[in-house]
Image (cartoon, rainbow, N blue to C red; front, side, top):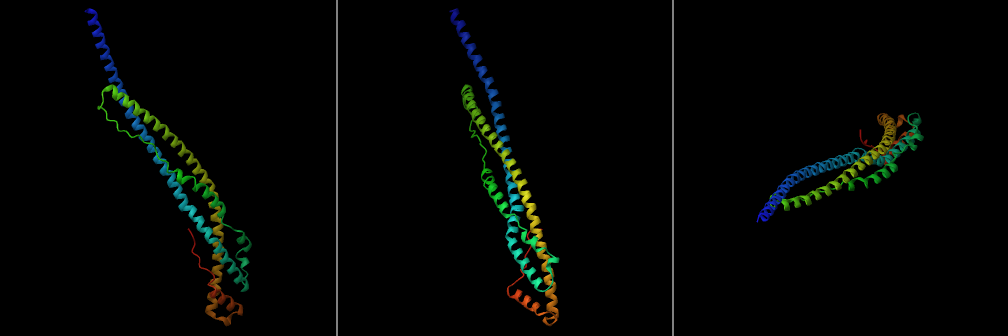
Amino acid sequence: MKCFIVFFLFLSSAQFVSAQNAKKLNIELRSQLNAARAELDSINRVISFRKTGLHDSWLKLKKNEFDLITAWGQQERLLKSNISFLYKVLTNLGDNPQQRVDITKIEETEIPLLEFDILYRSYSYMFPPKLNLTPTWVRDTLLLDKYKVKEENEQIHQMLKQYADAKDLNLQSIATLTQYGKDMSECQIKFEVIYKQSIMAYDALWNANSILMDRYSKLNKEYLAKGPKAFPPVYKKEFEMAEMAEYPKLIVRVGN
């Protein structure tokens, strides 16, 4: 009888200790679960912040500079055509436009549109799709206090595993975005070179066109004010031909 009582007391004591250990473990697991939730939220905010920053950088680069180069490239042929026309007319009028504009340099001046196009295409395929990267979330539907302590501990263990897996995936995403950031910086450095070359080329074309256009307009106004009799016949021929051909073109400058 004494042995049975001793065994019963031992068993009760073991169960009590086990229950106490389960409760203690439950407290620790709940704390870990709260920490895992907070950590995943923090990591996902980092992903969202970096995605937004890279996306905005790409759009800014495209809108403020890529689009400008495209517009400059589209005007290059028109500006050169205008300059060529004005140069020819002023030469025929005996005005010697070479003193105002070096036509050889102008003919050699080009917007680096091909280099720009290659750069733009290589990076436009890289960034936008990859910036759609989606953070991994955990569908946390665990209702604490719904189960017995031991069962709840098992549920929390499983949930912690899901949070750990999601964390690993999201840390990989952060590493990917970090690499994209380096690629973006590389793109900006390469593009800055092309952008500066484009500014110089466009300014040279625009300035040459403006100089010749101003001279042409001045002579045209004098011709209209004084009449054909005050000038050699070539004036009437050149100005009337220009009017019929709707040349020179009035070109609106792109960018400021």
